[in-house]
Image (cartoon, rainbow, N blue to C red; front, side, top):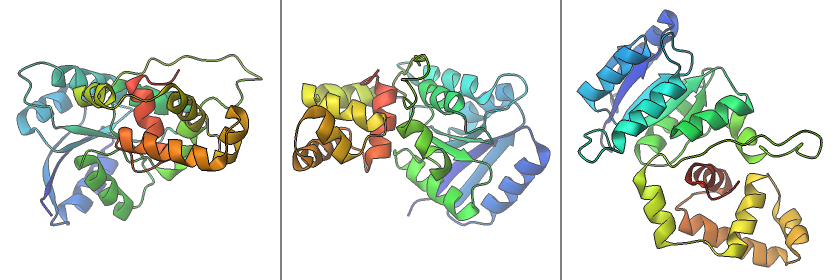
Length: 236
């Protein structure tokens, strides 16, 4: 397996040193540098063009979400050399607002800072290979983002695709109206049985729709499909 080029943007000294030390001990990781704030971090990414940039949300000059948004904006430029750089957000925040804002900005993966090192390595590999890795501790936030809507006002979150290939993927393999209905319920955290009940179809038919959705979105599972749907603006 090819090595993973990584940069770290983290303002907390002890955390930065700990992650640097751990990553440097693994032969599959090439540690390309670190920065303690967003401005230095963006310049570091421009210089090193890593496979994955690990970005902390709580940076002192601009937060990690703003940094991610700035990076993704540069990636959309026609002559950008940063198109393949992926973003892995590393944070202590597991609130719905923080999680959805990170994906809205274009983050590829989202990990909590108490993640084990083995899982961090897995997240880096998955992210480098173009998939989204979501910490199990916050996956429920993505899937259950609209639960409680009956008792509280709905909040809207603007979601944009992180990369042009999302738009191309959706255009090449458009979802049917029924698949979009199923996808909306997946994002709401509904089970196959509940989806079948709400749409007046059989569980077997739901499974077929889910399989088609995963194939069209190139997603490995329902959680990844939900993230891609939110980022591509396929659901409200």
